[in-house]
Image 1 (spheres, rainbow, N blue to C red):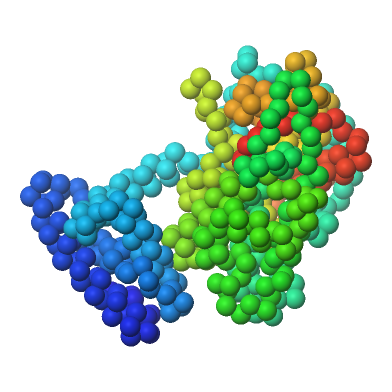
Image 2: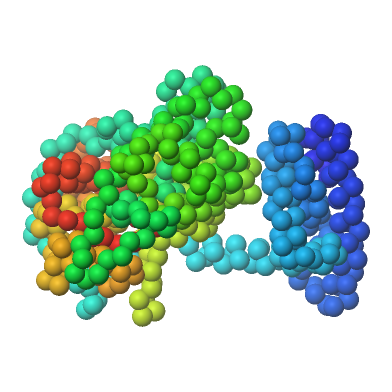
Length: 476
């Protein structure tokens, strides 16, 4: 209780905390004795769980507005979650104490396994995608002879910028501190990339599902990334006068309480939903809630603290994203072969690095962001060649099954093709910066992805590209 006593000023709230804590502490002592008698020597000690279990005992009516300190806010959040779970399970406090003790041990083991599973995430993307393109079942081929022509187009651009069209929130005009501005920009980017996927289906119900067959083409939705980015930018700018960061539209506290109806109401104020329908609000609201919960639970409700935990390393930040937020775990399996893409996790790192000018180490380790626009442009430049059956389905705007050979082939070939393009550019280009280290790459996959995506958006809007492949997914 030391942390809470230092930070909770309201006497009634503090008394509630103390009473509830004592009640559960008695139960913990009894259960700790029982666990020891059972021979469970691997469980956490009483000291290990005191803070978590004390928080879990807090009455559900605690007003977290009294808790201004981040650590106290986390305690209140854990308390509310634990109380809700205990009520749902209808467990007496003694039994719930035992659950907490065992869960703590399980969580520690799971975190260790997750970290090992996602170790070196960007390298996982490169190796698994290249292995797939070399296998017989791959139905997309890379035409290396056409890479030089595309490279010449890329080389015409002296600089490749991130937010060339000013779609994103930068905090310009915000009257608060620089620290708060960076926090709000980081939250904007994280909220945006959490729901940056699958805009094409026309919504006919809350799930965004739509009946299609092999002979019925899909009707396109005019909603694109541009409209989404601008809508969230508007949400952020409207809240410039909010001095309490918790009231910021994209704060972890607001995200953690997100529902489909709440999300729809929020977007209605910043986007014409009659013209631009947002498919699958249910999944998008779920991902926002997951983001808010994770930031509060693990990083005291701070996006900047989350970023700083990666210690300035791009690959480590990707790893933290996928271990902290399950919705970013973009991978697939095919006959025991693992394919890793991590489109939204990697683009989140690229966006954060650019928006906050972090200059993260190892940005060259990130791969291209395997979505639908980049392969569409690579196909236009004849760098990617689809099999005849896949070509027919894509051109007729037929839906492709998520996790199918067709989808995996398109995404894996996209990653490898851009990697080959970047290698060609770096081997056939003059240094871009005189003072830059000779060992530093002149081009990165991220920079080239930005260029390809922006050009793809422009050509698609003009109707100059063949259709993109359509997969109903929350990964891209």
